Image (tube, rainbow, N blue to C red):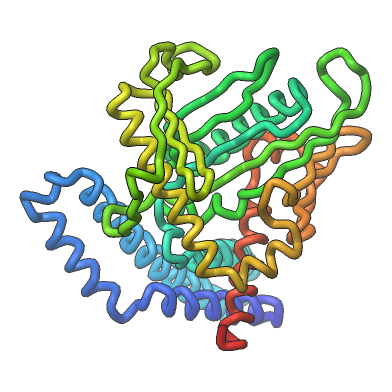
Length: 373
């Protein structure tokens, strides 16, 4: 076997070892049996939210086991084919098996990365909010471009996207929008997108000048029922108002929209998609999720401090720059990952940026653990 392929096999085996550790392969079959027993409980769907989470957790374990066993078997099969081809001097068989191993290496690397999504809330659904920054129409248009980018990313990954609220810009674009994005590891992947996104381009609104626009993105996990977040009724104000969204079937125009203000933190959440009763429930869940995110940030203060030094979050800190003129470039300011395929990024091709930031986060956690923090 050629040295290149031997190295690839070693890297794949290393990835498989990490996958086995992350999923605790020895106990996985027993945990699947427990999941199966719980799904057979006739009372399971009396609590739909709990049932859906159980089914997602079960499916995640099934996928992990299938990926691990599939990669392990594919590697063994193709190593055997190479050895057989070399014994019989069949170059075609060897070449095909080597190509297959290269593909296995790429898949194993991706699954290894996904295995790192083991944070407390990484597997949860997520809320995603986009807010236009200063700059009037330019900023509102940029916020709408980001809206399209994230919806396309989510849909391309099979996530369910549910619009929670939307406020249109006075002339074009949007002032703000909020979504609930549902699916396995939705929060784990999107959490790295929180922060300020900067756009440089020639104004499309007749000015003919180069303009810089800003928009903020905030991502926080949907809290599970088993996560207790207490909200003192005396600490909140609930207002109802008429939605001022972009119209159409998604945004209503009745006085059923709900805004909740949390006085101790200044957090404001809204929902304008359902009945007033449903909007109160949605907004309260969003508030609890925001408060939970603050608690996660507090627990990870040492890690976040390292990231904040690189400008990873906060309205005054840019995480990514999108330049459309005078040249084409999207660059993440935390990881230095960049690409000239700006249209691909704006069409939702964000995986390379998310993966690099996730790897950076994992490296930060490893350093903190090594220091005993």
